[in-house]
Image 1 (cartoon, rainbow, N blue to C red):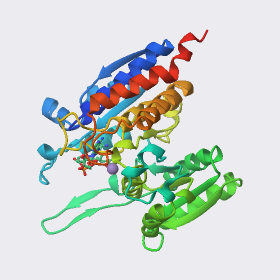
Image 2 (image 1 turned 90 degrees about the vertical axis):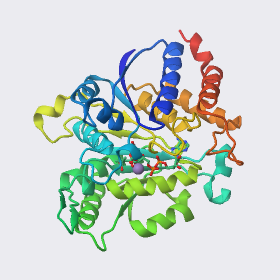
Image 3 (image 1 turned 60 degrees about the vertical axis):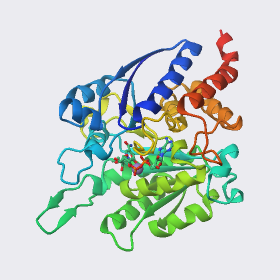
Image 4 (image 1 turned 135 degrees about the vertical axis):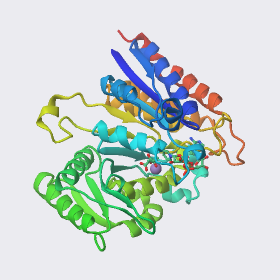
Length: 374
Ligand code: NAD
Ligand code: IPM
Ligand code: MN
């Protein structure tokens, strides 16, 4: 197949980890006979430096034309002055919104070989296989912001339609898994959460009678997630709760450097009939940030971005075999004890390039047979 993949390296370790994932995608392309064309564009701080804007029009246009987008991370101390009006993170929020990517899938499946990297007791981690569906284009991130001399406010707003579509996505996903959805909110305090709970209950009851839906308040969820992570299947929640809970959940896997994500929309995601035949573009990125503390040293863990590339193969290109192959290759590298510093017991791990080389080697071993297909 032919596919155009727009690569947005961004800032900090972003360029290091996207380079690793592109190498893996190129290898997959060669092995399976696909023609992947990579188009690199600036976003975030790098784009501010180059053009003055965190999401240049040319970057967005390229993403809209592409079959899929792979992103590293944005942000860093250089652009973090609280007084700045132009910020790298605005670029990321803007591209998510412009592409209608309301559902952010963040799977968490600790790998047996890396259990030692987690601060949680290993017996609690075996069998953990959950996925957080984070609402990505609404809530407090996108509400009106105001600042006066002595106060500031961020409005948290959700519409029924915004809640319905992400809950539907979570329930649909659960159908192919263990059929259980946990909806997380703060309905004891927030009006948006009370609406969220009402809508989630109705959608599950009317449209997914085969799914078991339970509700959990976000504060106790933060505790349960560490105390009994095996209990969870699909967790659906609003934008900011999902952001926070997934960084916490990364500790089940052992590192932020292991968690991938897929941000997806659906045709007509903008609620506009004219858009309903628009191409649906997915954006794939690790859940971690630009890690300024380790950027430029060649020691970042590339596995989360490589696993995001696997999600790209699956969700945007429909290449399930290829996606599985990449996932197996990362597992194989972990099984072989190829740990970057964030995973290594003594903190002395291999660098980004060596970890990527290990994945490529495993890819060869895992997918060698496929080369002889037809
Ligand atoms: P971070 O995720 O960048 O880093 C948190 C910690 O995890 C750091 O110690 C870092 O070294 C480590 N870490 C993260 N990814 C790693 C990897 N792949 N390998 C090894 N270690 C890794 O979070 P932060 O420090 O709070 O934020 C830094 C900047 O990143 C901020 O500007 C923030 O806005 C931005 N950010 C961007 C994204 C994104 O673009 N999607 C996500 C989160 C944070
Ligand atoms: C993430 C990041 C972003 C978010 C920031 C950088 C805007 O933390 O992708 O998890 O909060 O969504
Ligand atoms: Mn985050």
